[in-house]
Length: 592
Image (cartoon, rainbow, N blue to C red; front, side, top):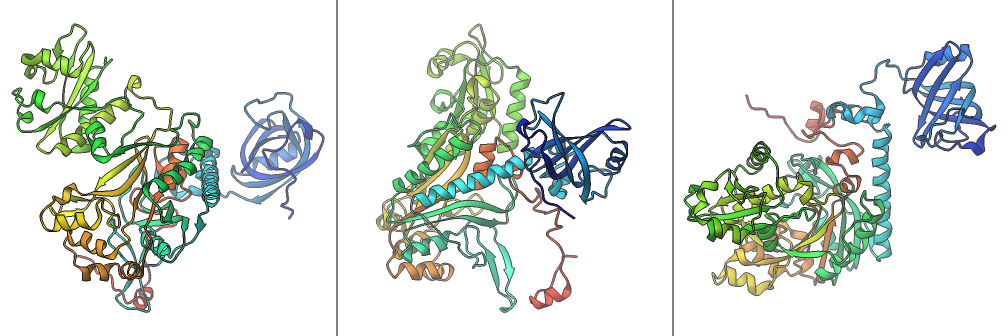
């Protein structure tokens, strides 16, 4: 059987009229006009071509083929009498002399129409992902991914970075998420872990004398799915630089990412230019209520604690009060209530409101509690006709800020007059706290990355250990890249001094022996003289999601898991045989 082709289904033009051609592809559709006239559409990776069948016997044979079967057609190119300007090959058609079925679709009914696959149930799409990817829209997402990765790789190599692959089977380490564990057959009772990130290996490469490292690295984390996060596996541009500062890393990433976003983004003509704006963490929380601010929204928070704390409204007493002032607001009470309900869903806390109407009166929500100080409120908040004020209050300022920040995002993104959507607005969040109080433990924990260099170094840590300094005031040389409200990269200047490492972990109740046992390779390597180094890791999947204008990260991954961390196409996770378990020295225990 001859399966070779002379052209792809997206290649033929008027210049090819009269040529004898052979095409291969999937039978997308067949429209029978009469017993001796039919129009077939042949589709491959590159496009579609119309095939005109003008022979009764051949049309009858075509009619027996199920759609999405793969076929080869040999025939003559001719000019179409009725052209299709929406189709790249719309000026021509092929009159077949012969055709063969290369791979039959044995099912008369498809699980979904290929061209409308994105309208199908997600689990159905993922079960038949090989069909879903035949949809040209999905094909374009995979092509985009390939081009973006290739361009990033090219630009990193131009910056003198060396691409190095780090191990997939490694040791478990406390890095914030659950590990995927792999039992070690030759070492009963012991396990490998799939890396949550190549963090330790890339720092060891710096200690080894490698000056600039990168890889498009697979990372594995057993965590729940979100729209912008897939469970299981994801990819990041992992990079590290020896003898480098924060400015060095940020500068490299700005030089690499800006032109990629300009070239491949939906809004490539509206991209933040380097150097990106840098916003300290505490400033971001105070102004936007988030360390991932969406700078496309033209709204900010205002602290109204002193203005409203004694107005008589119960939740405001002894609380921090954060407000979002929204001018040019003309939506209904029902519209407001819908957004406030969503704020409560996302934060488990209530927000409240009042507004100034077109007559200059304060109305709605908690307006009655602010009437006695109306003039002061109007002056302090710059209120004008048709202004809405949304507020959140809590005994903890950070909680009030976060709740108000969610309100800012939900209200702002729903109001076109305050949301300039069609752009890529980038910023760096810098100066993160080194430590925080854990919500579950109630004790001091690392806030972001335990391998970061604390601002002030060893002296700062010793002062905190001796009680001369509140550890919550210690800043870390950490930074996040935020694009349109999504954390798109994280990085830090690394802690390369074993003494500083020990003191940093001592504050979270880990001894020097704990550090040596949990991070033996890093501790040992640093004792042999490590260079100062810094790095970061932009998320590839999330970046491509933003470039494609998608809301779900699963739309740009070839074979993603579903929301329950299942591969419904391959049937993973799956059971294994008793023999396999015995070889791994494992026994399945289930609760009664």
